[in-house]
Image (cartoon, rainbow, N blue to C red; front, side):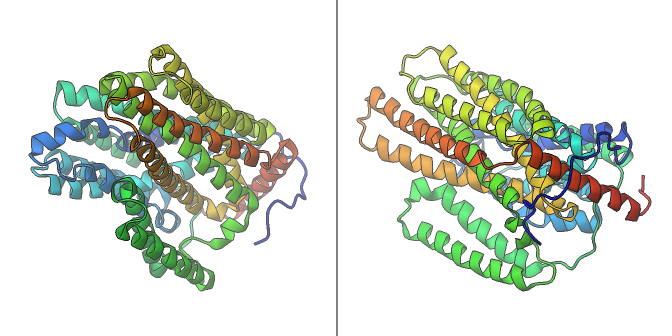
Length: 499
């Protein structure tokens, strides 16, 4: 496959028809949003309740594995998602994933010990891991090429709002009811989503019965487990410790073997040809940087506010809500702007806003008013929406349709690895700075957190520079025209849709 940056075509047709009619895409979008919001919410809703869960189960040793096991399972579920969705259809994979997530949620709520709870969180993660990429692929494929930015922008609202509202909901539930309901609330939502999916979704999207690449998936799975565990434990074990070095090096060696294998196998689990498309690879890098900046605030700002200011988890979660509200504005707007003028300028604006927010937090004094912090996270939300969706839709537009399911899985996986790596590195920076701070030196501790935010601001500047190389208006029109032509041909060749 050649680099799709080679421009050859004129503007896209002004009124491309909806592939499945105008009404059905919005019905399907509603079902997809329900499942996506629920699964992504589960990545943060449990965090604030970990101490209470440890006390209730009589075991606080290793309590962090309630979160780590879920995130690992989500990561493991994503590489095979593209093959499963293409082989068995988006609808079947979506429904099976919902069922698995619901069963895992019920078992988690009934867990009598920490060990069993961790196992049930793995079941949850394996089910939930496929929902986001499959949902994104469905949202992308259901709309005309010139409206996909707007569609993914709406889908992205759920992806952004869920992590921001998670701490608020988790803090309220664990305070007023019990930790069991953090998982039980998923069960009726899962049942509703499954019923709606069975009745309303159609078997749409690209299909291909290619051979299963078990070796490739096995290799990349071991790489992911090695690296994600290393990133999760690096600040505690130390980057120079034998276990961390072993995990990182073994993962790197296996990654080399994985790439060599994928280049020679006929039907690779992850086709290396995708990464030779410059636009797609560039969007992955920019999104990875934006994710690290975002998580620097989602993770370290609550720690700062709770440990240095003594704020409750519920209060901190409430302060983060404006971030979600701001992103709810710019996710759809960023997608719509991309449809019209391309991703370059929305992404530049988004990364600049991300950097501005991090810079503000990096200069706030310990006694700064909370209104200044809320304003900073609001700016953060505005920037994140502009930075994410234009990259997502443009990266997919740059690829042939046969790569959509695999590409959405890679995007989700890349975001997870970026977040884990970024948090691990920044946690090390924080720990290093705090090591030189006296126990009661709150000013010194505040300075340590400021360093973390300033590092994030510097990364946002790098992302801004990279965003300059994203497609502008003309190149974006060419990409849309290429996809429009491919979709028209696929509709001529496609079998009759199964309702």
